[in-house]
Image 1 (cartoon, rainbow, N blue to C red):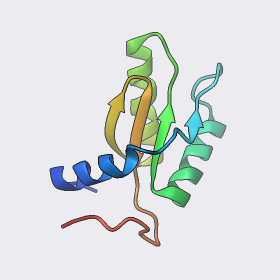
Image 2: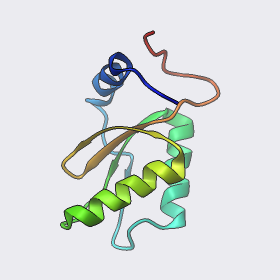
Image 3: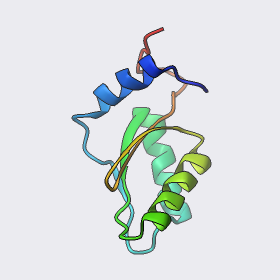
Length: 97
């Protein structure tokens, strides 16, 4: 899935008022957390994930792993918050052309 800049901007605008749906705990990225993120993507399509880590390198690796494991599109990272998008079968969000 390849999104155009216009589509990414549109999704970022939709994501702005959202609160993080999933927050990683002390155990980091576990199979249960990945399953929860996957479930949230199926339900909402566009979600925020909070990755509280003081180490920038570790935070970046965790975010990349989330994107890879869930097969989602990384839209933006703001501080400790990752915004990702993956269309579901019902296509709840209509993207601009």
